[in-house]
Length: 211
Ligand SMILES: C[S@@+](CC[C@H](N)C(=O)[O-])C[C@H]1O[C@@H](n2cnc3c(N)ncnc32)[C@H](O)[C@@H]1O
Picture 1: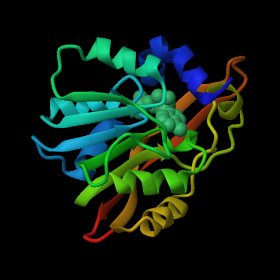
Picture 2 (picture 1 turned 180 degrees about the vertical axis):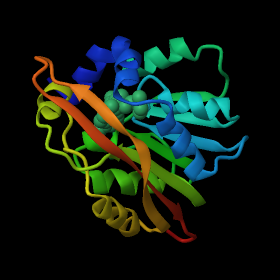
Picture 3 (picture 1 turned 120 degrees about the vertical axis):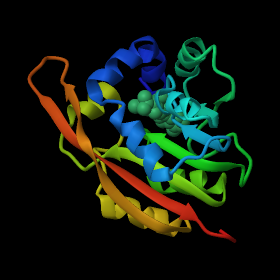
Picture 4 (picture 1 turned 30 degrees about the vertical axis):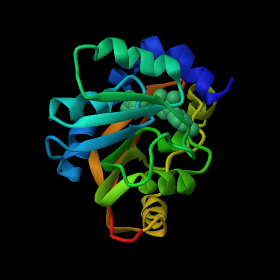
């Protein structure tokens, strides 16, 4: 099964799964680090069923929500049917369906550990940012829970924060840093013999002129 097939299959249960994995504190921290302003345009990459998009809409932003899984985006459309200002786009990590320098913020929550090449995915997210725009990624610290690879199609067992910071700098971002979210992502293996509790980081950076 591919990652896309996996997320198509779990789309209808994703919101319930997500509530077990992590809380709204993750998106609150991401939006606070970005210092989001109402009226601005954000992209939510690997948007899934709209966890981050929903928070951004509540704060008065417009959002381009991108995901490889039509089923996840369909869940978001149903859930946020009454919300204006969401542009739903099916797309892939390395060829995002957004033109250069379009958005003021890019968010990607629990997405980076699913992509084939994290540095290439980061460069692609930077491409769509306006000068002065901010990239904010929330994801897992490095861990050893192999069952997440086999059961949840994670490609990477989290990341070293210094690697993520280096990829941000190599993509042309400035004022780069990482911080703790202050909560763990929690998941139990299907047969109940393993329990993962993995700290979550936020990584941030700003696009300078001429990048
Ligand atoms: C763990 S879910 C997180 C969803 C959402 N951001 C959230 O916080 O609830 C990862 C999402 O990234 C999407 N995704 C994974 N790999 C992708 C890729 N290469 N291109 C586009 N989307 C991808 C999946 O379809 C899935 O919806």
